[in-house]
Amino acid sequence: MATSEFPPLAEREYKNTICLFDVDGTLTPARLSASPEILSTLRQLRQKVAIATVGGSDLPKQAEQLGDPTKLFDFTFAENGLTAYKFDQQLPSNSFIKYIGEDNYKELVKFLLHYIADLDIPVKRGTFIEFRNGMINVSPIGRNASTQERNEFEEFDKKAGVRAKLVEELKEKFGHLGLTFSIGGQISFDVFPNGWDKTYCLRHLEEEGKKEGGVEFATIHFFGDKTFKGGNDYEIFEDPRTVGHTVVGPEDTIAQLKELFKL
Image (cartoon, rainbow, N blue to C red; front, side, top):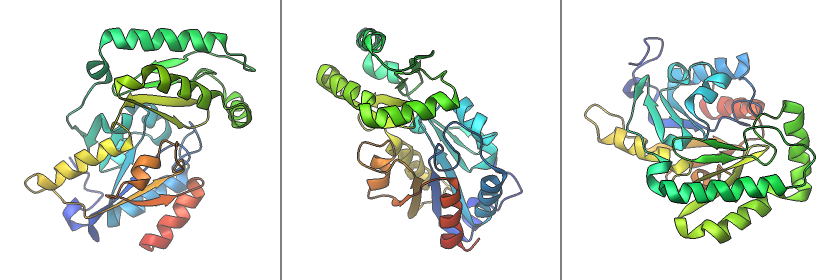
């Protein structure tokens, strides 16, 4: 249920509007915790307008960065909305493994592990493939890399194009499976069924408008940092159902929110 700290959705000043936020690079530095300033800004914003978060990471990873997102946001969309909450109540979910099938999944993982094993890159750490409910996340360096190693790999990858080359190989070999390969963050990319990008979460917002007592959101503001073509915010940024805003970090997010909503 909604906390009494905030007005009911239908009684917010902008009652048919919602602000939808990417996490990494928008609300927090990559894989780091949100600052007190961004958390305070979100609480102020929630007094006026509905707010939601959407990210490719699972709910525990969002919680590492934001605290309990189901308390901070009206809607929480983890794994692009494959795992979804309205306040603290879970909404219907879906599964990557059901879509692709076990045999196809094993073939995909086998190819990825062989490819990454043969890569000549400066360092490799652990967790090269992370299975999530709605996708897999693939990292040539490994998700166990330190913050410094992530930063160094990001700079290396800008020149070497390690992720971009691997994505092209995957499109050629596994394109028939109806999968999308989306580069995001510093060290990894996501693999998920076509249409299961961040626009998937919009299904939940549309369903909200159909429920008895629900709110129909006429305006959906989306804030993200990877809004360029090929970035993991691009599809939802370009979607005709959203008003897209490109940000260059949490401080920019705060500045844009203050300008838009007179905080």
